[in-house]
Length: 105
Image (cartoon, rainbow, N blue to C red; front, side, top):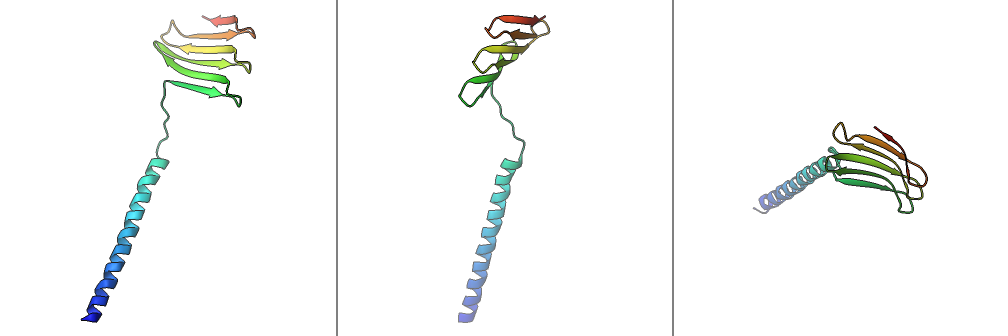
């Protein structure tokens, strides 16, 4: 009787270990699926900052279109590319004083 009880306890321990391993593997696979999957970052506005915290580029969505704006190291707007409908698409360039230097169309 004692031998049978010892055998059952060993089998029970083995089953518990096997169940723990299976649970660990399933958990690892689920977590890896979140890391390995497609990486998408969504926002209405992205601001790229330099090491001093000044904005150097802005990618933003606004009503009627979206735009990419580039700034120099002093924080002045230097270029803008705005896309919307066909008559709202424009590329603008600014001089060092922030005045409009060139625009299409």
